[in-house]
Length: 365
Image 1: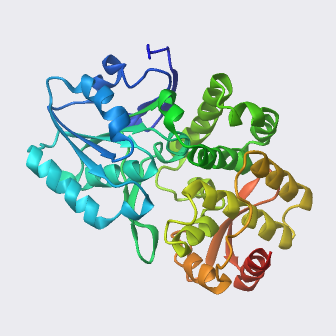
Image 2: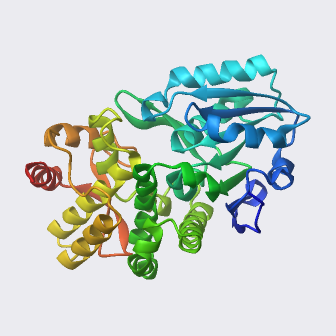
């Protein structure tokens, strides 16, 4: 498609600042993103689902470079150390120097693994995020969090490594399955639930347009979420304080994903259920009102996201997995809860008995 003038959002980090471009036809707009490559080597890291659809289009912008591709199988289970090792070997085979660039063409798994690979090669080389899922466009491609999973838990190993640019071409969303698209909407809703009640109200009004993938609503939703996250990242790049708020629902959600061995719930689905569990816990602790929980649940349901813990999950196992969360301190749970829509906060020393009670109610339901 012919490139359009994209929405541009700057992530302001001094000399490491970078643009996020959101629009149509950006994969083919090589004059824009090619300028962010500084050397003559590039490794395109993608997966076996995305590469057949978009690699050729991206490759047209790599003429004159020495480049190769490395493909993962699709799915969260492949965000592993073994695949990081294989990607590093691909860089070695390419003869990549310190001015090389890794280009992540895919969703969150591809972006996380590509960024971690780039952070490791020669102690850090450039990478560019080319997200092809809604979830990656609004969340994982922005902010420099990279990582891989361990059997013990999700994203337990990683590095902060900022990209040189983010190229969010919404043309790629046309091939995105409905379930994957809805999972991305969970991250949009999460951003509004954390700190922007007017945005939450806008999402309630635009739920039908977003479900229909209407361009204007979609670009506006992506831009508002990215703009919010960019501001947080600029103020707290390495998650020493405010950035932790972006993890609303994640402690519950990651436990659900891990317990399901990354096959039962997509990440966005885990976040959706996790947000609702965090809202119920906030209500139980007297921090928020039932009306806020109901409002969140209704919006999740309108966007066809799950709101229940899958059958067969064990509350004690989920609690044990939550203890491994990176936000915890001094052996106690540190969760992101809220005092209502748009009013999230970090709560340390959360009583495990209260968390377990919420999990038991959810798994019995």
